[in-house]
Image 1 (tube, rainbow over the protein chains, first blue to last red):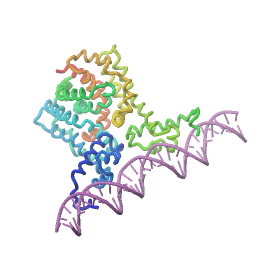
Image 2: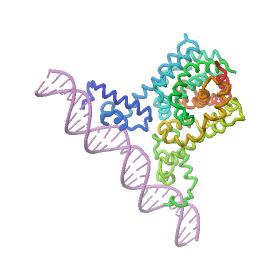
Image 3: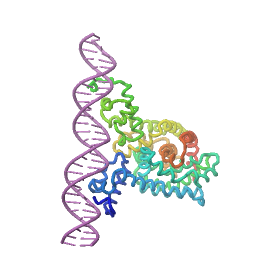
Image 4: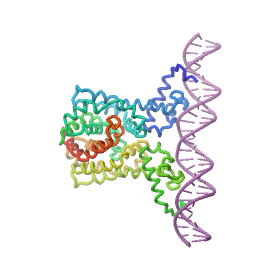
Length: 204
Length: 204
DNA sequence: TTAATATTTAATCAAATGATTAAAATATTT
DNA sequence: AAATATTTTAATCATTTGATTAAATATTAA
C-alpha cells in the first residue's frame, strides 16, 4: 500500500516493465497481449505491473503514445517549414523515417492496427496535432501541380517510405528476401525516394 | 449430435455465421474478436458456431484463407504473364487491386496484422504460392533498369496501391478527409499509378 | 538500531470467454 | 402420422486473464 502517496518509485523496475510492455505490445498488439506475457518478459511478478501502472490499459496508453510520437512527431515540423523546398522536405522526411523505422520496424503496423481497433480513442489525440492540409508542403504541392490533388503526393510519399516496412513480413514470405538485403534496400530508398517523388511530380 | 456424419448442413445458417465472422474478424483481428461477437452479429446462438465450425480457430482459418486469396490471388497470374508489358501489368494490377480494396478496404491491415502475430502459421500457406522473383514482371524490370534492384519497384507499386488503404484511418484523422473524397482519390489512382510508375522507372 | 515507508511476492478473486452438453424444437423421411 | 434426423437453444464447464489483497522483504530516515 505504498503506491498512493508521494511515490518515488524504483526507476529500474518500472522501466523494466515499460520496456517489456513496449516489446510485447508492439509485437502482438493490445488484444493479443497478456499482462502475464509482459510480466514474464520483464522478469517480474505480475502484481508489480498493476502496482506501478494500475492497469493493462494505462500501461498500454503510455506505450502507444510513445510510439505515435515516434511515428508522427517529426513529420509536423518538417512539412510546416516554409523555408525548405519540396525536394528538401521529401529527402529529409524519407531519411528520418527510414532511419526511425529501421530501428523500430513494427511501429507502423502496431499503431495503424490499434487505430483501426479503436478509432474514437485516438481521434482526440491526433486531431489537434498536425494539420497537413494547412502545411507549407501541401501549398507547395498545390502550386507545383495545380491540376492534381496534393493528397495524392502525400499518399505517394508515405507509401514509398512506410509500406515496405508494413509489407515486409508478407514480402519476406513471398520473395524469400533475406533480412540484410531488406535493410540494404531500405537504406538505398533514403535517397531514391526523393528522385522518384520528383519524377512523379513531373509525370504526365 | 448430427454434425459428425454425412452432414448436409443448412447453408443459410452456416453462411450467416461465416459472413458475421468475415466482418468481425477483419474489423477487429483474431485476438480482439469474441466468439460471442460473431454469434450476436450473425443473430444466432453461440453454440451454433461450434456446432458448425468446431472452434474459433477453425472458423478463423476459413476466413483468413478467403481474404488472403482476395489479396494475393490475382497478382500471381498477372505478374507471370510474359505477353504483357510492364505498363500493362501495372495498369492491370492497379485497376484490379484498387477495385478490390474499395470493396474490401480492411483486408490489408487484417492480413498483415495476422501474419505479424503468427508468421510461422502462414509460412507454408504462402511460400509455395507466387514466386515473384521468378516472374516475368521481375525479369522485365531487371531488363529495363539493370542498375536497380527490381524489388524496389515491386515495393513502389504495392506501396502506391495498398498504402492509402492501410493508412486511411490515420490519414482520415490528420487530414480530416471525407470518405467520398477518399473514394474519389482512390479511383483516380487507378490510372495515375501507371503514369507515376513509369516515371519512377525512368527517373535518375 | 528502530520505526516508517517502499517494494515485491504468493495466493486468490471475479469476470470474460471458448467450448460442451443435454434437451427441445424443427425439419425430413418413411 | 410416426419415426428419424437435423438444427437450435439454454445452461453450464473449465480455463484464461486482469486485478486485488495481505503478508514478506528491502530500503530509508530518525
